[in-house]
Length: 432
Ligand SMILES: Cc1cc2nc3c(=O)[nH]c(=O)nc-3n(C[C@H](O)[C@H](O)[C@H](O)COP(=O)(O)OP(=O)(O)OC[C@H]3O[C@@H](n4cnc5c(N)ncnc54)[C@H](O)[C@@H]3O)c2cc1C
Image (cartoon, rainbow, N blue to C red):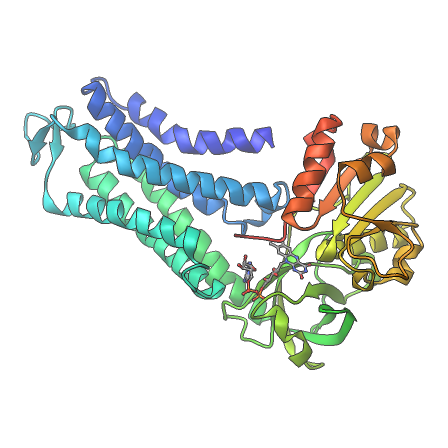
């Protein structure tokens, strides 16, 4: 994680370093600060594209929550930098290009086009970020907002690219122009890749729904199988974007953890909890319906881990990736011991209990009925204290998935027990 954090800082700050290295004379401190804010704002915007959650190699090494958190922080950095940027140029000598100032060391431009793109970005960035924060409160469907977010991001890149190259002192230099153009092209390609290219590949490989089962109230196990017989190569615990009953080019693809095991064959299964527009239509899906799978993504996998045992802590539908991991460990005769702590509100929400009973899990239910004989309450510090052995805290791997509150509680408990972050894999089911 530290390596990736350093990599992101490098991406954001390197253009500024290169800019300052490219000249011999500097302007007033105020003008340089204004320029630095502009440069950092633009490089942060380009880096945001890398942290969209859709870049496969990054998603396999970086927690999706962290990726999205950094995506948002960088968004706020863009907002702050863009907002402050123009105010530092007060007092600078303004006007068009001066023959005696070819490197714009003394003057800033006031030509219409270079300023217009900057002003348009200045106005659009806050609007764009406000929409990102309040899209659901404003009643936007997730898919509509996602399209606006992607296209709006590309528009901002184009505006800032134009402004940086035509108005900026550093951006107008050939090396830096090439750098900014390349970064912008890559950012736009990444959107094109996730919204068009991957869909073309998806369309060429349809899947079909082969099983639909309501395994507990409002939780469905959906099985899909590749119509060309070629399996998806994935690791147990990863997730994929699933489209069911819609075109491969539609925006209706949703992330779901794969709850089948790679070693179990070509079919994939997904445990889906009813929540909103798409997930509430599970009862309308029929066998044979066309489906598309875009994946795998995610880092919630125990493959290659060397810890002597695995503690899995799941809340509700957070059991989905755990099912995949448990099944894979069984099929591959993995000798690592497992402890599963699985919380639900009611006993009848426990899925695949017969299968799970084989690993002797700790079931926790917060609203037990009179037939409940397991643990009661929620997964909190006290329950973890009573359930975990010192050697598990000392050396085992922790895999956590569930509602935000449970994740926060478990993560802060593990922190107090000095379990290092490197031994904790967690996933929130929310892209924000
Ligand atoms: C990595 C990951 C793994 C997940 N695994 C599972 C799983 O195994 N089982 C399960 O039941 N749920 C899982 N989810 C949650 C699941 O993706 C959402 O519940 C589902 O997309 C909701 O869609 P909806 O149209 O029914 O609900 P809506 O009411 O339309 O949306 C509810 C919320 O779900 C999220 N969401 C909706 N559509 C999308 C989309 N296309 N892409 C991303 N997020 C979206 C948004 O935060 C939205 O506010 C996972 C989520 C993530 C991020």
